[in-house]
Amino acid sequence: MARGVRTVVIVSGVLPERAGVVVIGGGVVGASVAFHLAEAGVPDVLLLERDALASGSTSKAAGGVRAQFSDEVNIGLGARSLEAFAVFGTRPGQEIDLRRVGYLFLLSREDEVAAFERSVAVQNALGVPSRMISVAEARRLSPLIVPDGLLAAVYSPDDGHCTPESVVLGYAAGARRHGARVVTGCEVVGVEVVGGEIRSVVTNLGPVSAPTVVCAAGAWSAAVGAMVGVDLPVVPYRRQILVTDRAPGVPDDHEIPMTIDFTTTFYFHREGRGLLLGMSDPDEEPGFRLDRSDAWLPRLTEAIAARAPAVLDAGVTGGWAGLYEVTPDHNALIGEAAGPGRFLYATGFSGHGFLQGPAVGEVIRDLYLGREPVVDVTPLSADRFGGSTRPRLEIHHV
Image (cartoon, rainbow, N blue to C red; front, side, top):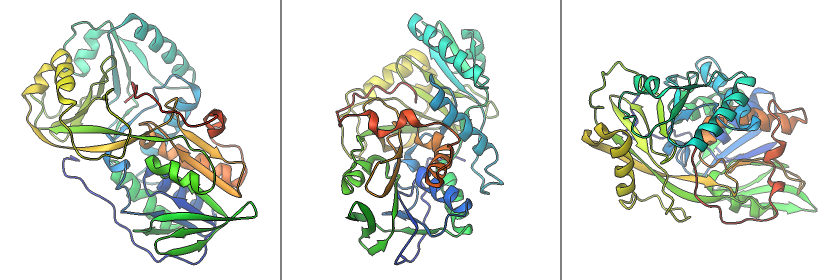
């Protein structure tokens, strides 16, 4: 399914007077949390989204899904989510156009090769079938690339990409089937705290009495945390994506893996008959800008010319800008605050929220129910930071 035309998932609902759990944010993480809570039998789950579902960062995601990370926590979240994506058609029940074409990292420096060799060893020990491959094999998998300067590559066949909006639709519909309520066009403007306990969530449509809040507000999470006095050091950064016309010199039936030139961060995967591509911009300043800018194009063009020059012959048919929600160490914030009341959070994914969304929903469900999470996310507690600092935009793992 090509995503050159942007779509959003629209669900309406009536705001109730009370709820057992209020989930703030209708992207993939919030929808996953609502689904897993409701499926587990948690009563009166309420998902609030100020716009339409999937209208924030989720709908702007590149759609990549993988378990190739360098540490056990992120590997675990990625692998668990891959399992969920593989059976998404039956649970919760939605076609997501999953393409398990693999992730291919291209390496051009000796230190990158050494780092990925270590990461592959950790991944393999946890059951991820990633492997170091030759440059020649990398070219067979992704024929648009040129080998100049490449030393090695890393590939995992279980990774791939799917359609983010469809994932949100599936989770939201599944949550509703299990009794959750989903209300869009509902902006949270405050949280009432009395005597150290959460009493209600205040919205533009009125208040909702509730003892528990889950913050899944993505790039807007710092403001939600501030409503209850919890520091969530999340800073928004714009990132941009382009979609091209038909990929030149590649048969339509040749599946191209998500291909990442690790040194430059330039990446691409097939999108319909064309390509979806992007690259991080180290000069990007923090902020909520969603306008498209040409400032990054010279650097992007240089990277394409060096690694996949044939892509320059494909016409650009569209594109969009979205937001990364970046933390100081580029790792997520997942956990439950010491107070007030019950305030749980799942945010700050720094570009990995979509691919980790299914597992994160399970983790928040387990934390809420007081049982051992499916993945130990203790290292991702917001308590690891003494305060918010401005992170550098150095996102290498697309």
